[in-house]
Length: 177
Ligand code: HEM
Image 1: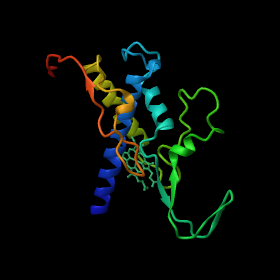
Image 2: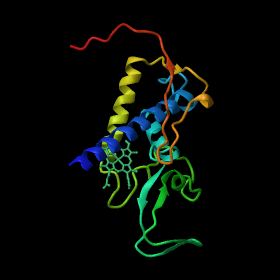
Image 3: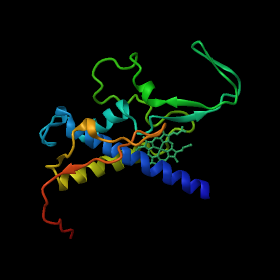
Image 4: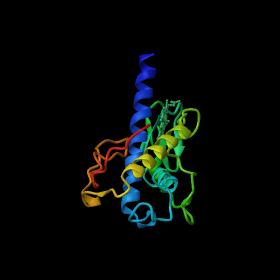
């Protein structure tokens, strides 16, 4: 039970958080999404798809242990040794990046096979809703630092902003009925 709780907490909190912040960064810095966030032609869903393709929240993971030595290209993967798979590198394979990627969801951001993420739909829904609610409350948000000055958390697995500093005008509190 403890292992299940730790797995669910780790798998269910950090990747959606990273998806939200990286997609927001894309929307704040890429003119195709409109400098004013609402004037662009591409949507929140397009930003999520692009991030999942170009900058997936789990950049490298899906550790696997070959039962026998496997020849991959001209490299032997020894048996019983961990192999870390780079979903980010797979997604950048020039053979699959042909034409316009808008709306293309043939990425490996959620892995594949028996241990693929069981919450693909849920994770996208959480991120989509979080971004839309945030932009609904503070549509005039803009980045507080130059994009190259943003700090990314260190680590071999995740692609995670340490923070996404933004500026916005204070609004009156929203009243919920
Ligand atoms: C939205 C962004 C998310 C991304 C990019 C993502 C990505 C991934 C990836 C790449 C794996 C495969 C790990 C592996 O093969 O070793 C995975 C597994 C998993 N994810 Fe997600 N995930 C996300 C959201 C979530 C959420 C919201 C939950 C739970 C509520 C969740 C629960 C899990 C669980 C339990 C596994 C392990 C599945 C297994 O080992 O059979 N994920 N996720």
